[in-house]
Image 1 (cartoon, rainbow, N blue to C red):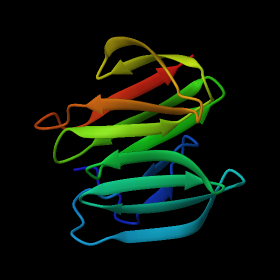
Image 2 (cartoon, helix red, strand yellow; image 1 turned 180 degrees about the vertical axis):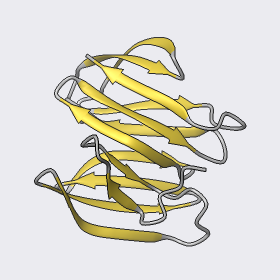
Image 3 (cartoon, rainbow, N blue to C red; image 1 turned 60 degrees about the vertical axis):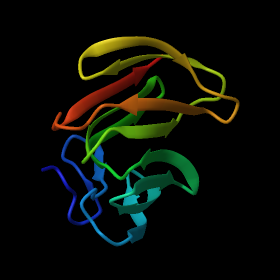
Length: 136
């Protein structure tokens, strides 16, 4: 299992990992510095949420564990694991079209709303870790 016992951590490749989908009670860590940005994570079995510099970045219902979360100007990529299928919302650029790949399968183009949020479903039940890539 890929749970992040410390709730959030920096990885050697410059990405971050966060979330612990097996926690029975809510846990959070604030003011985690990485790459000049401040992160806040809240996580447990029913929800995982990440904020970057006070702005929305990631949320899943139910909770997930996220490994190698890497943001660029062109999008975001990460590996996600959870106990069951998850609804994931990612904060990106407003009103922008992205190409989405889940588990190596291209699911097509999706457009963010005016708030820059992109919603997707990821089948995690019995899947282990699933790679998600979202690119312009």
